Picture 1 (cartoon, one colour):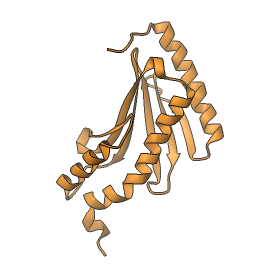
Picture 2 (tube, rainbow, N blue to C red):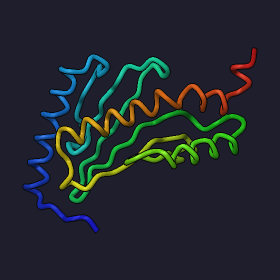
Picture 3 (cartoon, rainbow, N blue to C red):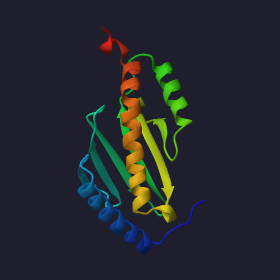
Length: 153
């Protein structure tokens, strides 16, 4: 089990993560928005403009032990569900720090978590970059599998 941080330690992480995310936005033109969830101050989103998928939004959620991160990749497949699930499960084999999963309404998500003691600016940049790059790399193939008839010539 990962280390349990105090409320004051979590508050320090909260400030740092906010600063790091806004600094990342200034340096990276693909990031079009960074904001704090108004309902939960321990949750942020980073919205990135893509080439394969128009936008990817990465959600970060700070807990007392871990920083969880996720992005919505695509809705539930309308067809070829078995082939799509096999495809993303096989992709999980080569991912580090993230995994494909089935979420609400059978949508496909990319998720992961990191112990708080490992959270720093380079690691936060790696997390956001990994989710973004993975979605950009796999989206064209998986959308064509799950919605094949919409892409038929």
